[in-house]
Image (tube, rainbow, N blue to C red; front, side, top):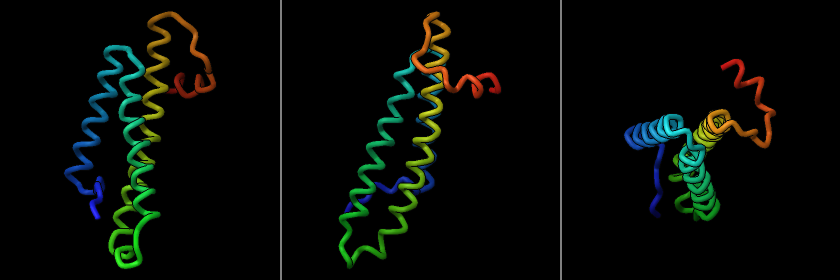
Length: 113
């Protein structure tokens, strides 16, 4: 079974570096769809890892379960980070274009940042 192991330190470093670069690119260009790219990618990876965990056979379950659980945990953390980065860049884009965002429920967070 082929598993995309993102808990490997080098892979994790490259994914984090790519995500941070896309977030900063979105901030500089003031485009909220740029940080949405890694958000969607991590959502797809989470679905992929959960599907692999569910379809593991009994013979390989004990071998691959810890790896997949680490990957799912990393996916969830990265989804959390990229979701807030998307909201942050969306707020920057709305202020730059002088338009009102649909939901200002996180204004208390943006004022404290």
